[in-house]
Image (cartoon, rainbow, N blue to C red; front, side, top):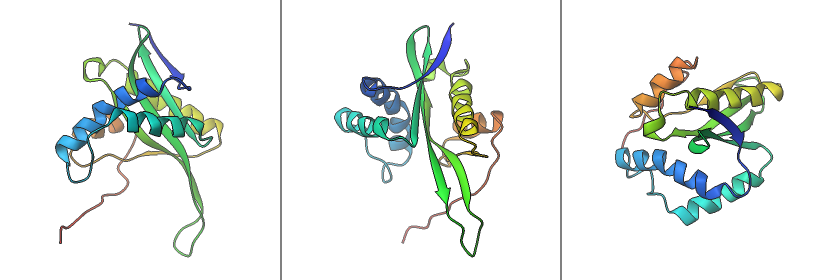
Length: 157
């Protein structure tokens, strides 16, 4: 299998929407009150906007010239406050690999693209968020060198 990672470009919106549906559908199944089922036209329009933003990078992993995964990363800045120093980091906002292509290096290659991007920009950290139900993602992040940072709790009222 030949695996490559490339920057997404205008014209990739439908491919990105299709890859996004993998993760979005899982999120809807697990947390229907928190997520909406993907509507292709809306997701395509969303990716069109993101591809225009300079602070957002989107990569597509291709296996044997077929798209199998994608990742979205963006720069984040938190100004200094009385509670914490100023902080700059790169947020891995989305990552998904089609189920039949998992455990073949696509996620690792996509994360490495984000790491390389952050390092080239002089950013000291890459962070990612994962919902508590997504244990597959947790294992992947830990295997790729991420460590747990925070837990978020909710209480219905």
